[in-house]
Image (tube, rainbow, N blue to C red; front, side):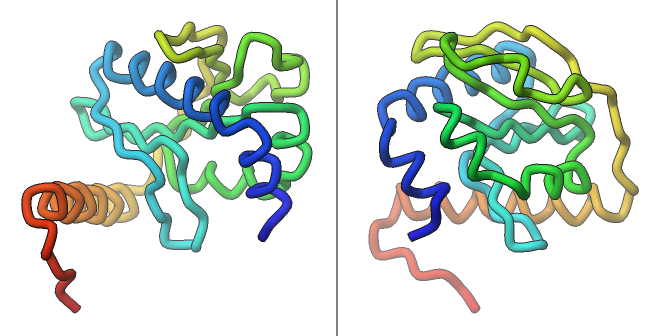
Length: 154
């Protein structure tokens, strides 16, 4: 088990609450969200949000300082989105989050956007590929809900 997994398991209720609040905030802003989206480089986005114009936002959820400290790979997300945010609980030491990364404070009921990150537009081919992958993942997840015996196609 990775150090990141250990940190998340130590505060699962906080992680769940921050994730729920950040998702609500993204939806209120007009984004559709998927959780735990695998990326082509092997990383996994906690929250993958797609805007009406096809813009892609990744929100990485951090429940504690320990969770933040063990994640050294977060810069890898920058190549897979137009904007990157961290969503944290209210008691998280916000100065730890780099100034050029967006910041959301959230709980189970909602979130507040404290800082917008700069927009770093992705290449059109990468965006198209990610949006297709996202649509297929959403479709597969819906199929599993509607058909418990659903088997993935190879």
